[in-house]
Image (cartoon, rainbow, N blue to C red):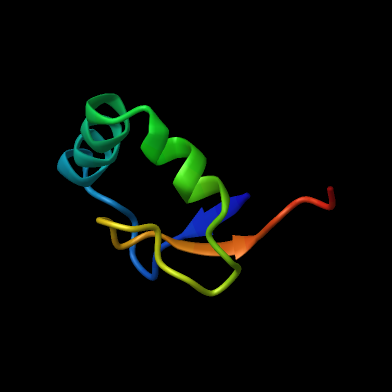
Length: 53
């Protein structure tokens, strides 16, 4: 999956993303199911593309 923001994320936003994934490893699996155009839960990151399965 690929995600993007309208503006470049700050170091603190990247750290927050990493903290969220470290707090609950199962969150990565949930994020992986996020549809194109949707926001990753708990973040400002939007999925822009998904690889073909």
